[in-house]
Length: 80
Image (cartoon, rainbow, N blue to C red; front, top):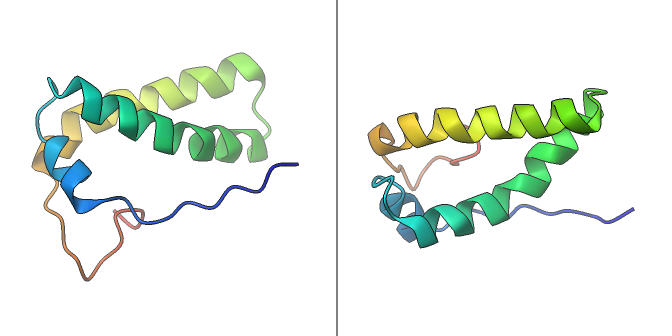
């Protein structure tokens, strides 16, 4: 089993995600968060296809919601 540790998300990356057209930033974000989301979905007991659908749905919501996100250095992005 591979241990996965999610560190804090760089504030500069979160700022760049305000623009859905920032393909490199979104690629990095997906690379950072996909393993975590897939692990959570697996812990819920979802099959491979359902995990993939759930992760895709989460990213679709984030594409819509992250432009509104205001970074607060006193709070964790994960808590948002």
